[in-house]
Length: 235
Image (cartoon, rainbow, N blue to C red; front, side, top):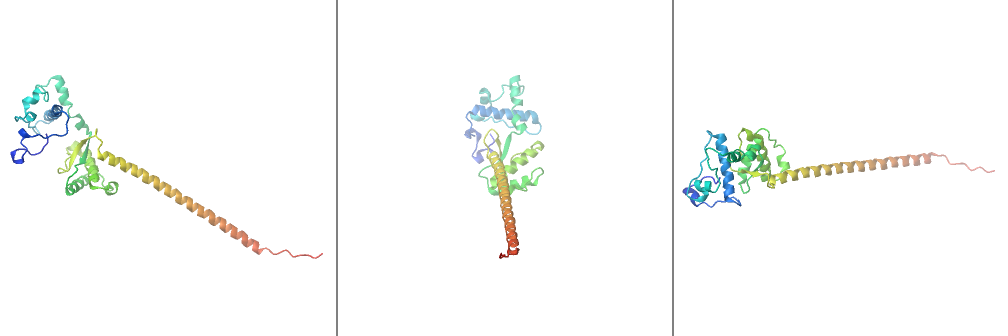
């Protein structure tokens, strides 16, 4: 179940584990996980081996999971329907339909190291990251996601020393909200700059009109002062 190191020394013996991940249906959750394991084993056999738990607790009991439908009836020779389920189990992962985001509550030093690593690679331009994203977590969200999507086909994982995890895109992720907010902020800033620019142009044009009008009035007044007065004639 992805709980990391396990065993009596760590107090996480699978027999007594009651670890949950917010799932509504344990059997459905276990089936989805097991189909992904079988998919990975079928496509990556020889690279790694999944250790299917067989302890006594039902949550980790292979035979009980088979009886409840969490495994195909024959894990060595799938029926047609089971085969479709197994080989379609990782389609979202293959398409990269996830966000790689920073874990909340991670030590800032771990996030900093992760951001430094992501920004040191190719295809990730972090030149404006400090101005675009005000907090370290937001910077890590963006950098981790950019790096993972750019390099996942070459084997990159969304881990960054334990500082990152994948989020389903069906959830309203904070990364999407941050990027949308950034785009809106950029648009608003651009509009504000445009308004300020044209306001300044209007003020300058007004000043020029006033100055030109004043110069003309002064010139006209000066010419009037140069006129000779009419002499009175006695008849």
